[in-house]
Image 1 (cartoon, rainbow, N blue to C red):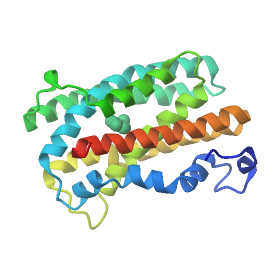
Image 2 (cartoon, helix red, strand yellow):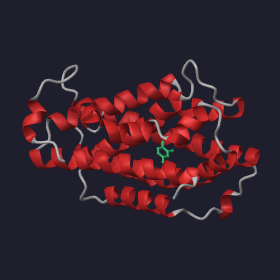
Image 3 (cartoon, helix red, strand yellow):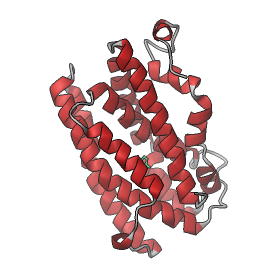
Length: 233
Ligand SMILES: Cc1ncc(CN)c(N)n1
């Protein structure tokens, strides 16, 4: 079900929080992506380490594909954004990936995962293809930034859940959870959300509908990525 234009003017949280409204509307799928059994198993300490290693190897490949995706958003922001501070935020996100890739290599050594021989799983290939489709110069900044915000937010909400009071996350996995679950990353996601909301406020009906579909696709891909990590597909 695609949101109708009328809902865009409907009562919203804060000033004009379209993204929050979409999260509510797609609550089931959103919860599926941010409270997936893979994450719940980290949180309750029952995670199978082979699942964690599978996730680590596959996510390393995903993050490598994420670099050109963010580069393409930087280019779109430069051409299309009405606010030059967008570039600063996106550039910061891209720079952080350098550290993130180094972290994956260090973590892989720790867990005995050979990153140079990882074969991408179908769920990963499909997700990276989706990213690639958004890299096309024909795809508008509004759509790409919607995807970017949603992708980062799923990880933030998922891993932050593993650090909340009452969680039994194993000590050796806490660093992983901190990487995306920390407050600084949360603030970064909120800044991405603000840009997305600002763009959606000004979007045409057509763009608005397309952006909602992008959000749904991201959530579906994230669920598939967790399923793959658990070894259930
Ligand atoms: C699959 C996936 N989604 C999101 C992220 C966070 N950048 C990630 N590393 N991997």
